[in-house]
Length: 116
Image: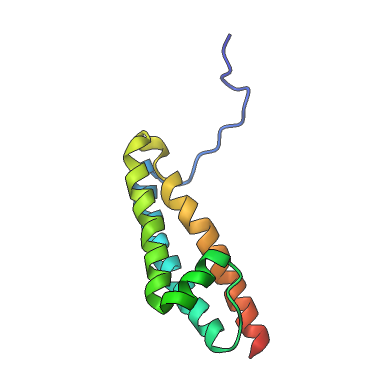
């Protein structure tokens, strides 16, 4: 029994290997990390509150250093888990960081824009 043709096959108009995709996603991880930290602290400066209770506790107790330690821990766990996966599936690791951090940045920018 063969499943060839049972599911639609989509191909990108350019060659994108899992390694290339992973590298691109790590760049986006770095950008979203910086953007999240910046927008979080701009929002706090404007009188907004951090909604994540773990991040709020770290920021209240240790300020920027607390936030950076949380982000470093997340990236560290991702890097430790990375070799466990086969190469083809490794882009899911940075994607797991990019998605929530980018959503957080969008929420932060929206919230900040409503305050200004």
